[in-house]
Amino acid sequence: MPLRLIFMGTPDFAVPTLLELVAHGHEIAAVYTRVAKPAGRGMKLQLSPVEQEARRLGIPVLTPSTLKTPEALENSAHTRPMPPWSSPMA
Image 1 (cartoon, one colour):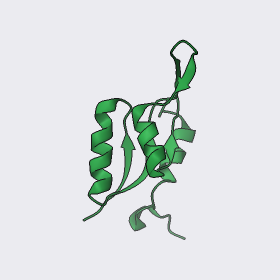
Image 2: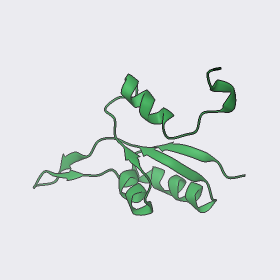
Image 3: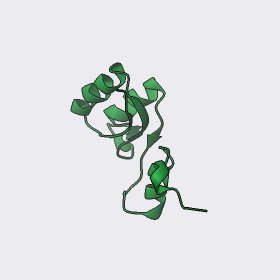
């Protein structure tokens, strides 16, 4: 049964897991990874391996500096539908 998931990862070794989830038909609603950092002699921004692959696959990428802010929690809530039992009663 395919799942709707949020993937969190950054390094090279996380990429195969992301690819396997997609290959098995799971919907990746969003990818959370670290912010791009300057690297190399030119100090160009270097995207994480997971961000590069997610962008190639057309998956939305989020790079919050922390997951503890109300904004980060709100963003994650908008990537999935709310279960019927969590809706406020009118």
